[in-house]
Image (tube, rainbow, N blue to C red):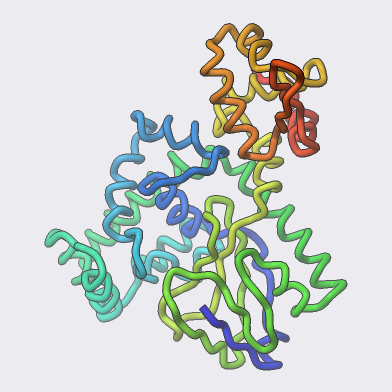
Length: 325
């Protein structure tokens, strides 16, 4: 995606004050409905799909239809008012004009199957819109809200980091820091699922950090909507915030214990991990591989064994979170 800036757009580009709960709902739905290799979310995903709190199944089923893994999903699900809070976003969604609902759901049907029962939503029936809002509210309560502390911590850290860049290097320096993006004035090129051009035309661009967003940024499909780019926070900030806000809840108690065991005595072999955790060699090796892929530990051969040691990020996590329960 090529985002075209004018001098006026550069002056109006800004960082969002906070994350957007409806965008977090959409991105967490992507993680639950589709393949996700990020080890930070493995235990979170398994626990929810095994039969998590009420609201998970209904939410994932709804989002599987309305937000498919394809080139398009409707903008009415993520209105700009969501930046002011979940309830204001849901109220704005329920007030979507009928004509726009029909147009967006028709476009969705061109790219992905939409069951006939969604015709009532396309007609803008108030009861149906209230039902959709209720499902999304329940999904947010079950999936996103329990990790509110970690989400806010990561988003605040990301905003603080980019605010410093903005103060020191200006808007163009800020744009150059965005993930999966390249700034070549006057165009910001972003890795994207479809090929498109977005001309800001003096409206500026709102940059919204997201905790659950995977690798690539997302934007609204309708170029007439207020321009926004939703981008993933730095994974390092996400890990640090999980340590502060409940590492075990998303990482799982076993992997948290493996991380602690590696750090207890300046490193551990796979055999030592298995002994300390009373588990099999295969299980200890598997958990160590996940932590290594996440950048939390490093592994090197020490004679006939392999020795696992903490990386600086792994050390920072343990210093922040303390021992697992």
